Image 1 (tube, helix red, strand yellow):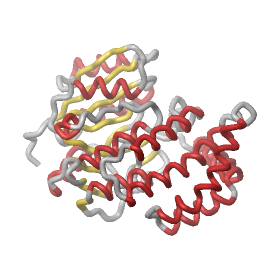
Image 2: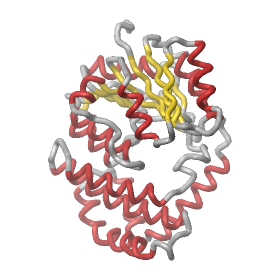
Image 3: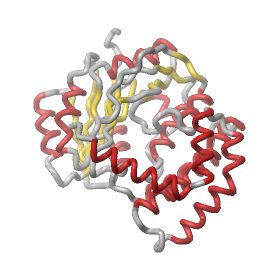
Length: 332
């Protein structure tokens, strides 16, 4: 692929010193060289900022922003403001990339003439098996957005590539509160795009064993903010079709169970007894309509039936399994 297009890579960084060398090396060693690397130090109290500055001295493609801690959303937005590339990707500060990540993402959008591209699959620290077969497809904006909302594709913004002009035309930023901001950004980008180039190869590595992340350090705000965000998404859909509305309704039902999980994980049932009861009530109330109308795979429907019948048991079982998996996850 000719390197006549610049790709801006925005990385929000906070307490990431343990993982930064691996991440930054995976970016600067990309097979596609015409990249702009924007590292946003979000007031990190560790040596993350110093590490970024050291790499900037060695590679002229790196720009470093140091700012007071304002959260990942503000950090990403500030990085996006100074991006000069025709294409933009978002990367989390504790993850890392396969060396052909940019090359592959550009293939997805160029072979399908799309304003957005994404892979349906990712590596994690617990899944190191590459997809056996890959084919590049072109999905409609409606279908791609639904697959993110349901979600059959990771909802984060990072296994995707966006046309910068498209994002700026629609003033799309991380303007929603954490968490659920990635779902908002990705699903709206898909709706605004002319269509979406799809691949299935794993080129992004998502870290599940960072003890500073929301995945391991449970916070009830994750559930309540996510509930607010999915309702906002539904109310402001660009493509208002039954297909997407049903996907949103399913995610709303799913979020009640996620919030219930977080109440149990934080051992805060007594403190949040009304919210706890509300989650149980809406799990029952919304179960049939949410799961019958959404475009779900049979395996998902069976799983959801178990959740609908035994929500507390399922949440406790999930917590136990997650803790067990984290203990075994020793990948650096």
